Length: 352
Ligand code: SAM
Ligand code: FES
Image 1 (cartoon, rainbow, N blue to C red):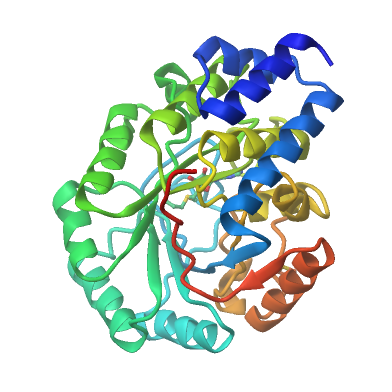
Image 2 (cartoon, rainbow, N blue to C red):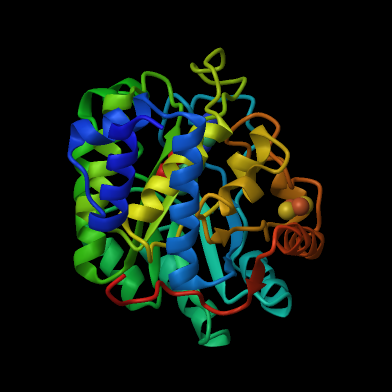
C-alpha cells in the first residue's frame, strides 16, 4: 500500500485527528488495501468500546408536512405529489407502546418542519411518553427552531437531538438549499443544542450534488471539532419529484469508508447504519456495521403512513409491520456476528 495513506490511517487511529488536506488525501487516494486497513481499525476501535452490541432506535415519522424546500428532499414544500399526513398524539403514543413491547428503549421522533407542532404540543407529547416510559430516551429530529424552544423540549424530557449539518461548507450548503435557509442558522442551532445539554447528532448525505472531497474533508474536520455524541451519514438518493431527480446517488463504498473514518475520529461515537444505506444496496446496513457503525433504526411508524414519508426513491421497510422490521433486522445483525441489545444505548463516556 502506498506509504502516505498508510501513515495517515495510522495517524488517525492514534491521534483521532488529521489536517484538512490529509482528510482530503485519504478520500481522494483510497484503494482496496486502504479501505481494508481503515475498516479493520474501525471495527477494532468500535469493539473496544461497544463489543458486539448494536443499539436499536425506534423511528417514528410523525409528520411529513414541511415548510422548507431543500432541493434534495422528497417531502419538500413544493412537492405537490407528496401525500401529506400528521399523526395525532394518541397515534404517536400508540407507536411507543408497541415499540416498548418490542424492546425499544429509545424513540426517535422525526418529522418535516411542521408548524402545527408548537412547543406546547411537543412538550405535551414528550412529557406523556416520559411519564409512561421513564426508562426510555427520546431523540428529536424535527429540524431548526430557536434556543428557547429547544430548552423547553429538553426540560420536558427530550434527551437527544439529531440535526444533520448537511455540509460544513457554506457555498455547498447554498447549492443544496434555497436562499431562505441559512448555513449559519443551522450551525448555531447545533451549538445551542449542545449548550442546553442534549446529546447531539450532526451528519450529512454522502454523494450529495456538488459534494467534493474538499467539502467532505470539511465535514470530517467539523465532526472532529464539534465532537457530537452521534453522527448520521447515509448516501444521497434522488427523489423523482425534486430538483435533484436526475442526480446520481451516493455509494455504499464511500459511505462505509467515511463511517470507518468517523469511528476513528471518535471511537465512542454512536454511528447508525442508515435506512438509506440499506436502500441503495441489499446488505448496505450490514456493510455499515462491518465498517464501524453501531446503531440501527428500525421503523415504528404506522404501516398506513410509511410509504408517505418518502425522502427518496424506493425506501425500504415501508411494507413491514414494526414487529417484522424488528425481527428482520435482528436476524441480519446476528448473521454478521453482532447482537442487538435493548437498552437506552447512551454513548459510553471515557478516554478512548
Ligand atoms: N426536518 C428534520 C431536519 O431537517 O433535520 C428531520 C427530517 S429530514 C427529512 C432528515 C434527513 O433526511 C435530512 O437531514 C437529510 O440529510 C436526509 N435526506 C433528505 N432527503 C434525502 C435524500 N434524497 N437522500 C438521502 N437522505 C435524505
Ligand atoms: Fe425493516 Fe428488514 S429491517 S423489514
